[in-house]
Length: 372
Image 1 (tube, helix red, strand yellow):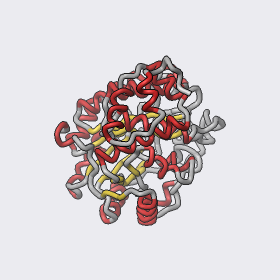
Image 2: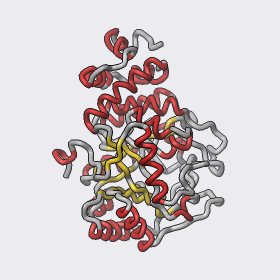
Image 3: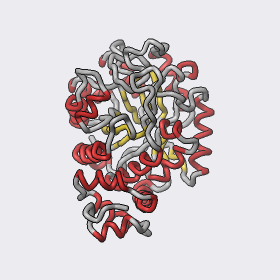
């Protein structure tokens, strides 16, 4: 059970009784936002199944109030698995000699966009390793060309750490959103997952510069990485409260056999779902994906994530022959599906879970009021 000194009696009562209205969920959201680091860590470490169910119910009320039963689709294009970084957990790290490297051409990327547009996607996510061949100028040309061909889509980039001027260039070229997970907000834990020269401070600086450039910003962290504690996760939540990103992507750590962490245990589904519910309560208007990693960990992982507060899915538009090579972790799902098959499968899954696909851009609910 949750320790008495963690929170006041009124909140303990709410945590053990599922919310029965939006007003009750909103009240719990406000109270949770007042918790300090030690209190958040205790809540994460000591949450019972009853507490988890209560948080999940409250997250559902907030999600439905702001977004209804909608699930937004982002068409993912993994256009290069070449990376200059050497993160210890990642299968496309520079030192991995067992991965077959590839780069899509501009023509191939544009063909993926065309197919995605025909399938109804109105957001494309261009993701890669930190590939030196895709310079900011080259990316800016690609962004501008996609924007010219598809002016009604939202365009998201996920290409790693760049200079502030490069972020401004890409924003001016027409990119709307940028995903850059901070991975962990605990500096010592960050250092245990990355080689010397990669720092948490630099990652956080990049996230702030993305916001200053006018992007809708996506941050996030892995759940269950080696050495992670409840205190590490509490620091993640507090950093996100400071950053206030529009999108937050979390997923369980899944080892990749050819990395230094390849023999470690994966993260837990239950803890991932708990944190998704907490994120929905702490950031009621955020866009939260049900990640491929959670679907890899459990056959119904994505459906469970939607039930915990998520409202975004990212089906893969990459050419089928390259998907297995974007090997961030082992046993990744959907590597053999064609894009159209993936679209139909996800729609069935979403509808069977009681939600509906929304084919719009899927902006945050208040972005038109506050965005640029």
